[in-house]
Amino acid sequence: MLLSKGFAKSLWNSRKNLMADQNRLPLPAGPYMAELDITYQCNLRCRMCQRWQDLRRDELPLEIYRNLAHEFQELGVHQISIAGGEPLLREDVFRIIAGFAARGMSVNLCTNGMLVEKYRRELADSGATCVTVSLDGATAACHDGIRGRAGSHREIERGIKSFLAQRANGTPVLRVRMTVSDDNSHEVRKFYSDWCGVADDVLFQPVHQCSDAYYTGMQKASLSVDAAVISEQLQGTKLAKDPYMKQWIDSIETGEGVPHAPCYAGVLMARIDPWGNVYPCLEQHVSVGSVREEPLSRIWNSTALEQERKRLSCDRTCRCWYNNTALIGHFGTLIKNTIPSRVLRSKHPAVSPGAQRLGKRSIFTDR
Image (cartoon, rainbow, N blue to C red; front, side):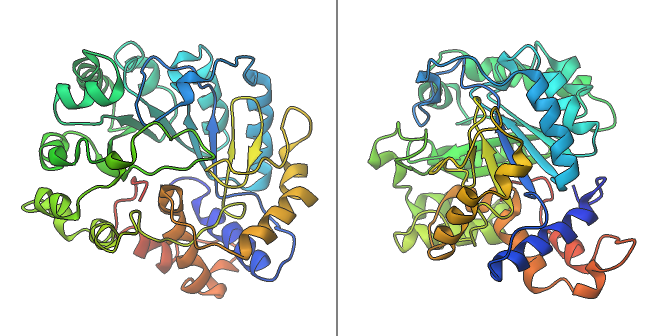
């Protein structure tokens, strides 16, 4: 990501946005990251997610995504996350990916892995920077129970192996992600040992609940992960010294759950659902417009979004997983506080010392 085309320019755009937001001025650039949910159709029935229960169809057509790719390029958007539902259920998913990748954006495809074997060649040639596969357990019994389909763990493992054999030169990067709850926290160490050295990145994402979004299926007891269990599971692994994992354990012990990270909703990030509704917060609290009705550039500078930014600026103390998504909280704070403005003003910006410091952590992690 740090060496990808357009990243240095995105540092400059992001800093301008942060400074403008701090001074209550219109944002001069688009978001650093856009999450695009291209469908809520899904071939699994995950307990923590309710999107598969949404029966609406008539998702945004390919033409609108092509228009968005052009707009994103003009706005300086750098990171694109293609998600769902299960995005590989859309026949045009690879044309959607190609539209953004061809314009120099870094594309992460989030998939439940069920169709990875079927589309291993297309994935390898898609132009995506990263493919993130969700597995919610180190054993079939645990994963299949959470994901609601017997045999899915075996099918996903087979798909990952076939994809790794198919890709050339280590691209796209493969990440495996486990959404950690009380139901699977006892398998963290085995999950890490199974995939470390096989996948390019191993990510543990704390499960959390938000009443306004689509992740409300788990019982409250499953959300209360035991800090002692996580600590014990990390012993003997490299993750025992990982700063984020330490913060997570500390947050659990104090009853706060997900670690606090600065919120840059509506400034560095935005989300668009399958029908074109635009949300400044990835939790989808408030829709500020639709790309079916007007260009994103107009929505991004609209009165509705400006009012939402002002509302958020009065209280950015919420704790959610998305504050930690794609390093947004850390990335935003870094460029706001530590990257010298003289570096950002360079006519030919290179990867700055601040960006190099970012690289000390896994550059393909959502943390």
